[in-house]
Image (cartoon, rainbow, N blue to C red; front, side, top):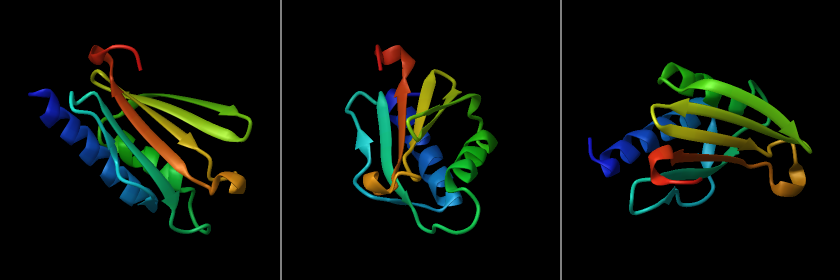
Length: 115
């Protein structure tokens, strides 16, 4: 599969997971011409109900993402997932109102070099 097509598939994974988690797009998606990076800046649609980041991660698991690692740094929750040669970094600032409560998803392809 060519790199652009694979990146498109990764992008579709992220979009579907964001929808499943109740996250809305804040800005245009991040992409690069080589098909090495796909990213989204999102915001929870609702402050009530299930945790949107956990729901997003569950959707990603259902779509083949695994190897989950979680850390907490200064009020920011970080979750790392992998799928084939892609690494997805989820950064959850939703508890930080000063940062407008956003969530960032950034997927990078390992074979493209350092991320």
